Image (cartoon, rainbow, N blue to C red; front, side, top):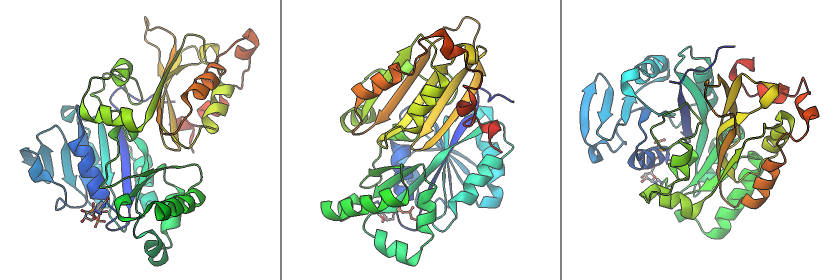
Length: 347
Ligand SMILES: Nc1nc2c(ncn2[C@@H]2O[C@H](COP(=O)(O)OP(=O)(O)OP(=O)(O)O)[C@@H](O)[C@H]2O)c(=O)[nH]1
């Protein structure tokens, strides 16, 4: 099994029907990227507020934005070419967001990313933007919307400002039926916390890993405050190895409001050679085994971000996932559940 390199960049797909607010969400992410270097791939530059940022330079159809973000126009056939360009080490990107065209089938794009032979990328999940005011009408015109929602890892219910509480609640109920178990985040003008999509710090380590102290630190910068007021976060550290079966039981049954999980897990004797980086956005979950550093402390460190979550209960459930008896470690098939979420195991 090839291990992901330290340079792997998560690629998040932002999909949604025409006019649902994809570009608005993307602009919000770019504007609130903090220290995160975002590569954006869009269908045309028209709607991206490039003027609002200082354009540092332009190479072919790739535009470098002053805040470290990159932007390029692409049609699907060119995707690999642009991914190659955006993943060159000189770009030092932390994440790539692809805005799908309003009429595209998002699963095609997801398939292309998963099939890409570019070793520097890793699929980071599908976010579907929905127009709260046009939801019923869009479903009537485009019944395929239900299919798109069913495969989304996270749903942004945008334009919440255009509907009343009752209608918003009704749409949320419908969405809960269409994409069971997927977090639905109401938003106005695409204002969602970037932390829900990707790590918001220049990363010193690989995807899904910590910048742990950074994430937990409240340094008073704007979107961090925003996160703290709207979302709860929980950090968990354990020196005892985690029992793979129990942890998978916890992850498979995680509450819908738990949008984001990152960190790494120590499985002890179940795999003494590797630590398992975790990356989850909504229902999307992946593990990335990586060899432990020689002097690296063997422990698990995880960060959870969500809304309406019972952090005390989650902490207890996580504590219960620790190995407590030597018999726990003797379960030779214990890792199977984890390996289902390691990319090379997906056939
Ligand atoms: N009232 C309201 N208008 C919004 C909101 N989000 C976006 N809009 C407006 O809706 C229109 C469409 O938004 P875009 O972000 O361009 O939508 P899009 O999904 O990128 O559109 P396409 O690229 O055409 O598929 C724009 O005029 C936005 O200003 C919102 O939350 N509330």
